[in-house]
Picture (cartoon, rainbow, N blue to C red):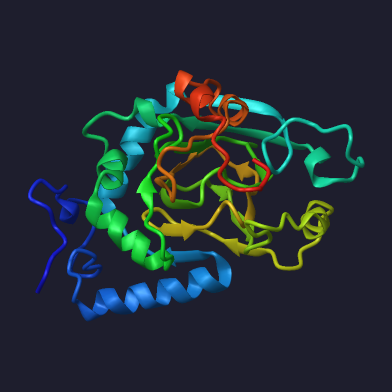
Length: 290
């Protein structure tokens, strides 16, 4: 049976039960069925969940890594609009660009992960990238992201932290929950609320006003892997309750590997930027707000 393994590929069986999820065997019918299910869910909802995708031992290793790096988390307590962009006083006060919501959360930047990081090894796997690309079901190839801070970070939420409604600066994010909060920390999203050629401010405003039409919820468990089109589906994480920190790995993929977050976005979310962020900020990708 043909395999996508390369000669120096990461030993994925260390992290994933390849008998249950044979993502490396391109002709395996179980893999084909999983890809078909994923494509249907991504087209309908911009989201797909694979429960218990990681082995329990891999989850424990990710938990240990995240807890070790926890002191280096960059926390932000501020207010942001759904686009992580500055205010625009030329717009009406109720416009989504002018709707700033409380945010308190943190990130462990990708550049802090060591070479033995399980999250980094998963992200560097061409087998996993190819499987995710097939599941997403798009004609254009996807790539690992060039952004040195945002390419595969850990999201961190402690007691009372909240991540309000927002869009991602990249097309596709893969979420792998490493550690679940005692309560709260529920992922909510509105599938495909905007398109590359349509910002759809009216419906976005409706959700920001508390409307629940189109809102879906997902209670992730440790080891679950979620595929998500976060550039087009507005989403949030509800407040965390209890003393257990919520850690989630966020391997991130793009159509254009050259593009990065804008400098403003990078400073707002990760607390810093690199010279590359400023250099690449002039590249126009689409007509959407970031």
